[in-house]
Length: 453
Image 1 (cartoon, rainbow, N blue to C red):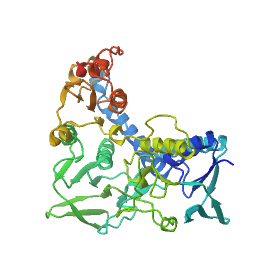
Image 2: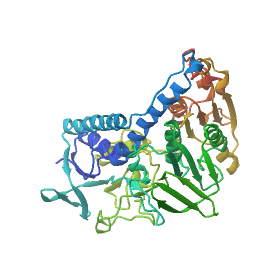
Image 3: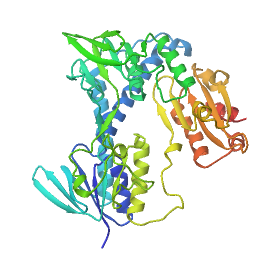
Image 4: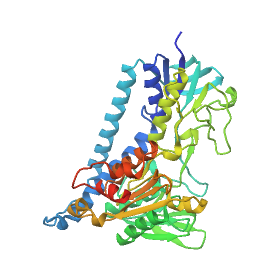
């Protein structure tokens, strides 16, 4: 009899596990209460990137004189932007649903919970359904974190999911949180012409990133008129009519027309009956997993945001594929686990930011010996052709072996260019391998080979 796999959640981890496990012969059922494709993916990631793309088009129009064009004007059509986002979401969701159907995966609409190690109960619109499983994958994602000092109203005080796009475009947006999501919102709404204030609780934006990378983004924000409140931690939000005030712990107050909470997420692990199945969660509600994404109960897996690993769709999808192989007992590769330290990450601001592997600051902090080479895009012909020479390429390598350990890219299309360094890091390539690779001329990629020399 085929392995029965029940998956709670149809996001990137869930749908990738489903299609791959079904292809490998498993009997797969996906339980989804919101949207097949994942709420975090289709309601967070995709809308934000669609809005950023629209903002980039506006920015290009504003900088058109540098490309030899006459001055152009453009305005944001909020209703048109909403329709565009919805159309993209619908197309992606339909594609995922069709793929699941083609692979013979059964999708049950409803809210599922474990009632034992091998049993799942689903509350559907038509009643309750009992499912028996040989293996279970918990891939229920996450939701925006809301602190006890904030009361989002969906009008003037917003969570991230209420801002794709907001009911009206803010005149002055106060963004609380300077991590990846926060700075992307700063860039997005500044591109749309709004005044923006960013409340930064640490001493730099993107506190977990390379300080040189963060400094480049801060410089660009200041150039665009963004106000940075460095070292200020928000402790309260007050609304008076059509105005909001964000109070900080040092006495400073940021005032605007709207406030946006971008201070992380919390896992959707409550109400899943994990205790009934003997599955342990940590103090934050995440399900700790091993290298095969197994919980403390061997046949119950966790993937995506709820696993407490990197909250990236790409990581979740890779986890899903690895889980599918493990569930059916397929040993396709000697090293089958996900190496989270080698996962590339991108920040879709302007300029874009992307990193992979070992960071320069991290290596110095731990005393690790590294070699760092850096090339600015100001010397790249394609960057000059694009009239955008901001940023740089930085490569971190092992001075003894020449192995590429990591790298950072700040500049146009950084999220695409980092793939070259990600491949080098994951395949243990040397800098000489990058140098000896023939790349297109003129292209931004040529700066990679220059930095590797």
